[in-house]
Amino acid sequence: MKKKILLLSVFSLALTSGVLAQQDRAMTHSMYDKLSVNPGSTGSEDGICGTLLYRNQWDKFNGAPNSVVFNVEANLDRWVKNSGVGIAFYHDAIGFNRQNNLLLNYAYHFEIPNAGSLGVGIGLGMVNFSTAPSWVPPETMNDIILPNAYSGTNFDMNLGLYWKGNKNYYAGISTTHLSQSILTDPNLNNINFNTARHYYLMGGYRFTELFGASREFDLDLNTLMRTEFRKFSADITARVFWQNKLYGGLGYRTGESVLLLLGASLQMSTATQLSIGYAYDITTAKYINPSWGTHEIMLRFCYIVPPPPITKSAHPRWL
Image 1: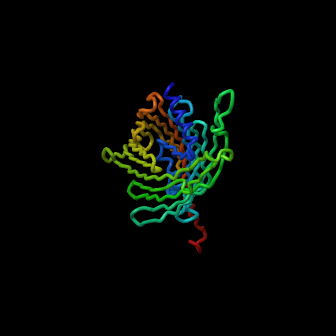
Image 2: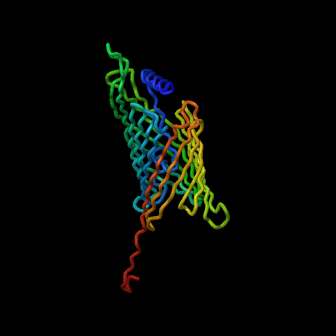
Image 3: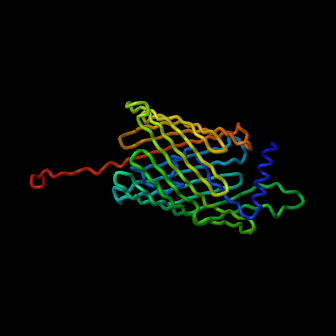
C-alpha cells in the first residue's frame, strides 16, 4: 500500500512540474511492431499484413499502463515500384492519462543487387493526449494546483531507415515524435504534455538449418534499443521455431523484466497466414512487486497477393 501511495505521489508531483515528458510504450512483440517505430520498414514484407497487439502491464496494479497497437501495411511493388504504405495506430493508458497516435507511413525501398534493400520511410499523422483525473481535495476548498480534465491534439512525425538483407537479417534506425509537439492545458498554462523525441535502433538475424539439413528448427534473434536521452532500455529476444509453425523463446528487457514468448503460425491457404503469440514478462525491477507480471497478446494476419495471371491467345497468329 505504501508503494502505491508513493508512486501516486511522484506521479502527481510530475504533473505540476511544468512539462511532462512521455516515455513511449515498450512491446515484448517488438519484432511485429516495426511499423509504428520505424516507417522505413513499411511494406518490406510481401503482401498485406495487419497486426494487433494488446499489453496489460503490471497486472492488477491500479493505474498501470495498458497499450493497444494496430498496424496495417502493404507492399505496393505490383502497382508502384519499390513502394510500401501503412497505417500505424496505438493507444496508451497510464493512470489518469490517455495517449493516441495515428500515422500514415510511406517507404521507398532502394534495391541493392545481391545484397538487399534499404527502406527510407516517413510517418505523418497526429498525437492526442487527454487526462481525466479524479482527485479527492479537502472538503473546505479545492486545490487550484491540481490539474483538471483536458484534451489536446497536435501534429506528429516519424522518420526511419530500414535495411533488409538477402541473408535472413535486418537492421534499422529511426526517430519518433520528431515534431516534439507540446499540448497545453488551456486552464493551467504550467501544465503541459511534451511528446519527447525518441530514438530506436533495431536488428535481427535468423539461423536456418539449426540442427542439420532437416530444416525443422530455426533460431530467430531480435533486439530493439530505445531512448529519449533520459532513459535507455533494450530488448533482446531469442526464439526457436519448429517447421515455421510453433515457437518458444526467452528475452530480457534491461533493468525491468525477463520475457517469455510462445506462438504459432497457421497457413490457412496458399495466400493467407495467421500468427498468434503470447508473452509474459516477469518483473525484476526493485520498485515493482514481482507478482505484478505483464501479459501481452499478438495477432497477425497476412495475405500474399498472387502474381497476375499470364494470358495467352489461342490464335496461332498471336502465339
